[in-house]
Image 1 (cartoon, rainbow, N blue to C red):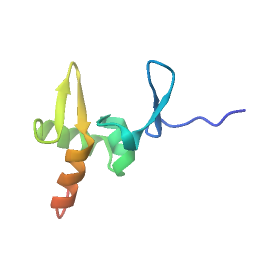
Image 2 (cartoon, one colour):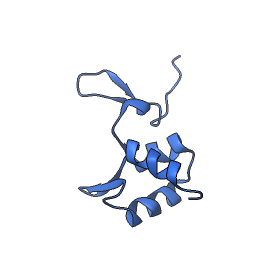
Image 3 (tube, rainbow, N blue to C red):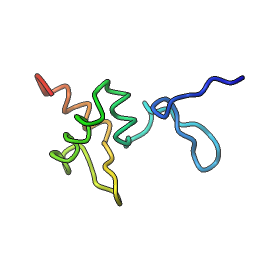
Image 4 (tube, one colour):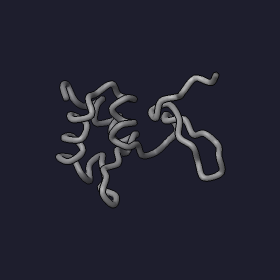
Length: 79
């Protein structure tokens, strides 16, 4: 029996390979919340308030630009 991997750990590419979250440029709200240890509601609120700064709205969902969000966290004293 195989262990299930969480969505925040890996994502399947179109060719069937796995891309670790730490190598992805953009993350979904759920992936970002798990990766940065922030609640989903807080992550979504931050994405909505900072569109263009570290998040983008794509279709019907927000994507977090991981390198920009890392810099945002580094420059912030609290979130």
